[in-house]
Image (cartoon, rainbow, N blue to C red; front, side):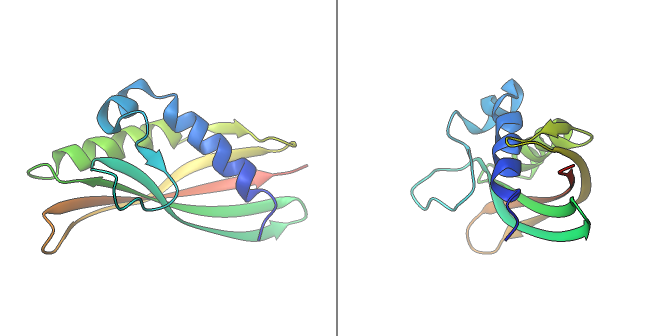
Length: 132
């Protein structure tokens, strides 16, 4: 596992929770990195991360976020995802311990979870990390 993953996740989460519009949609504890069965929707979840080395000191990280909502229709989940995308796309983040991450939105897809009434919008974000 990459030694950059924890500093990257910390910087990404700090950026997300600093967004007042996103926090208004999901609440103060509505951004996290593991499923909380007791947590009511809406929320934004970092569901997956992958890393690979591109060159000496340079890594590519692929982060998957899920915006979840039980509101009627897709509007709330899409609004959460749009806030997260706006906040992260194009961001340059300084990492603890040195290095810089450049973020870019890669993908977005919405789906309804059958039988639950919940809607999920998944965002794929690429982070290029330069540790030099």
